[in-house]
Length: 250
Image: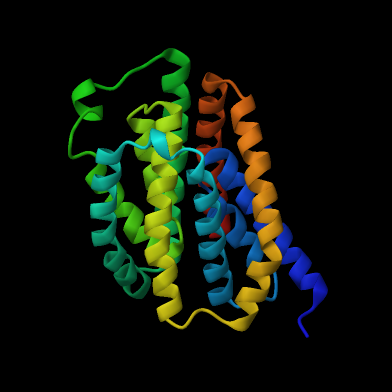
């Protein structure tokens, strides 16, 4: 019989991660994985659980926002994401996770600070950079690599969306659509790789009610915050995630 306290703690962590994802559109794995690592939980179970819960949150989000998707951007992101997935498998084998996490953490801190300064002083990048037809490709490639290796497929897509200054509804809907498709491949890969266990489904089924609750609360929070203030919170959150990533390998 699985310990009730452990199930409760896992469900609480899933709620925090799902609330983060529902509010900001990403970041559930960065919030949840360090907390799950503190529990007596196999790493494979933790990774697979976050994959399943993230996929579930994405499905809930997209049902109410599918009409705002930018299909051209989504297609370009997904095509390069599929190429990036096997690259991520190579990273797992050949590159220590600590090195990748440190680089990603430093990048997010720099990008978060830059974005806050840009917003405060109304700085703008050249339109030819933001409007490039090929711009989604490298971000999609990074998403596939980081997703298959470390469950961090959302961070490059969020950086792309903020770099392009996409309208918030388009940003959120396209982001979640990408997550659904890329997460589906990642979840299937985890299942075929033998990472799914009976315990995983116990945790997942126990978490479903709080996943739905987190989705409703996060959506309500997002809709109540003015767009300009939400953008500032998003940049602060990116900066915070960078700090969390660096602390996790300190």
